[in-house]
Amino acid sequence: MATKEVMIVTPEEMKNLVPSERAMDAYKFAIAHAGVEMDEGAEADFVAQRNAKAEGFRDLAEVQKWMEKTASSIKTATKHAFNVGDPDELPDGFKWSKQSYTYEWQADEGPHQVVHDLIEKGLVSVEQLVQQLTVSMVAKAAGVTQEKIMEMFPQYVCAKHKERTFSIK
Image (cartoon, rainbow, N blue to C red):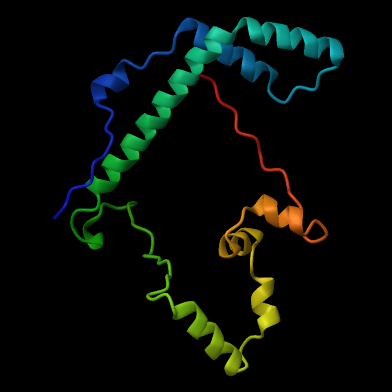
């Protein structure tokens, strides 16, 4: 049986994870101001104080990355530890969720044949099937980008904002 490589954070490494004073100072500053409404003057002061703590926020970002790796390592190691044996051998309060599945086409002709048969049996119409298509699916099938689809059909396709991703390097 092939083994899966896992990233492990050792207990010794966990003990050495101590945030710097400037990281803790930046974190205290951030939580003290989280969700606080500010007028223009207060916002300008906040930005100046925040930017003065940039190195602390960089340290804090490193701590966050290590904590995420550590949490992932704990989850992986624990999952492997409790994947041995039968579910009825687990201690009280421990349980695996019910097995779930993803469904995939076994052959390239599968989607065409299934759609054809469903329409022929009157279980679904072409219009009902088309309503389930996403812009991404149509763009992929056409071999163009979603932006190109939006450019070609601006009356039917719009771009909605996603939450921005923030990073510190």
